[in-house]
Image 1 (cartoon, rainbow, N blue to C red):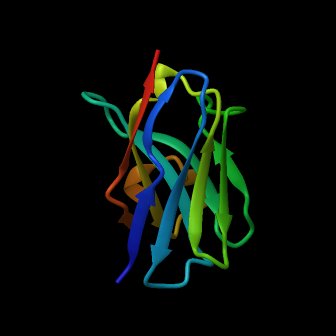
Image 2 (image 1 turned 45 degrees about the vertical axis):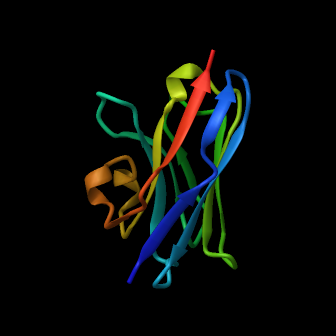
Length: 125
């Protein structure tokens, strides 16, 4: 049974940093795309970043490019999202997802097969 468990969220001031983790278990993810999405209150789920588990190719939404970095540790089966220069508009519940996805569809949440429970990130002014 596939499990994705996010951690690392919290409250941070604008301009600060956080690192999110997503521990993945239950199968081999070598052929998968792993992604981070977020959802703010009253808004739809929004794509943040994605990475191919095997080759490590990275993809980012324009809103986070240059501030966020996605990475993975194959040995630990863990996905990361390093978030720097955080802004109040980054406040949301952050989810990690996994799926066998063509890289042209990494921003499409409905293409992902598995999701974690989410971790809250709050950025104060």
